[in-house]
Length: 151
Image (tube, rainbow, N blue to C red; front, side, top):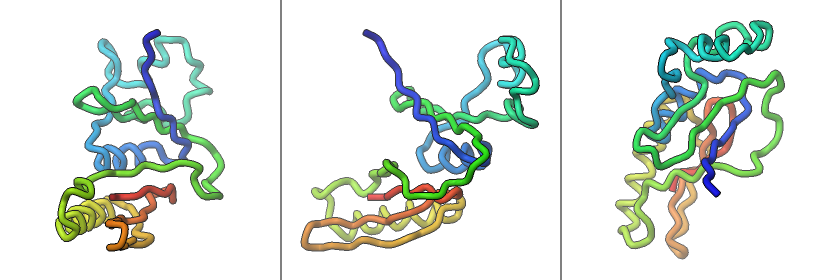
């Protein structure tokens, strides 16, 4: 059986999330299908009623893709309610290189990635530094408060 995976993330501002997570994951905004200038034009051609397309929906991408084609497509689905509780799952952005890399090098890599994503709209929650286990990680939140780690 052939299968692909899409990760769907509920959010209030899909375009802001596309911009942030494309930068965080090294993804790109997903272009509209061949033959269409926008996603809105594509959805309208499929017969999706205009009232089901919120203002601005489909004018800019609401999904991101791995340009190398390895990772899953990520779609940011607009929902009316805000995030209210802790995530049940989260991304771990593995930039440190693993425990075979010296801890000072891992720490520099994690800090550099965290600083870059703070500039993009993330919030630093906590640095976890446990030399006994070799853990060095940054606990972060994306622009809508979803938790993720940089390790």
